[in-house]
Image (cartoon, rainbow, N blue to C red; front, top):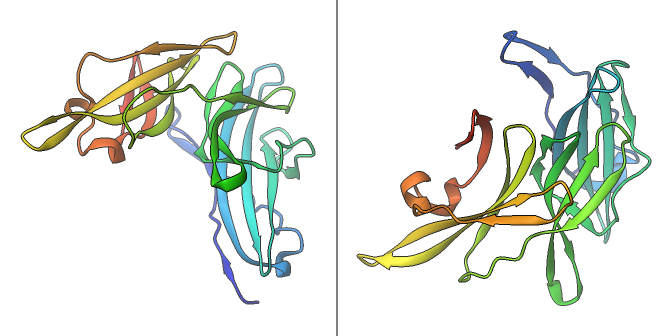
Length: 223
């Protein structure tokens, strides 16, 4: 079998109990021989409080030997202890990125849709853990100089923030980086907040370091 196939073992780690659960292997990608490359595209994890259940979302992308690609959406629940395919999925043209953040019963990802002439529409996609239905929101618009990078994060386990980092001013021939934060309200509108300190003083090495990875108290932890 020729081609490149990239996937990994998944596990759930409980830092409070200092214990972890290794998840069973996912089913083989459908018609795997049709694809020259298969990638891990995105992951998500959340709690269904109505059923006392935890769910893991796995999204893989198969790139064909000729034109075309296929996305696969799987879900694992700790109650059933098996993987199954999600029948309700986002639009084919929507691509999710990286690891989603869980808040208010849903997992959120930065995502995008490609249009003609390679124009990219930035989006926020979310998956309701209880109903297992998808939703898509327009990403907030940033009025800033070019070169902005964006990331998604979580605060207090209840609010989702979109973080834009961009070069905002020069000092000693070097750019200072600023960060604008857009907090997602319950009515799916955004509230913009601009920190008073340049991001470079908080996030060393500029926008490449702007990757919120966890939250503690009222603060985000950055890698």
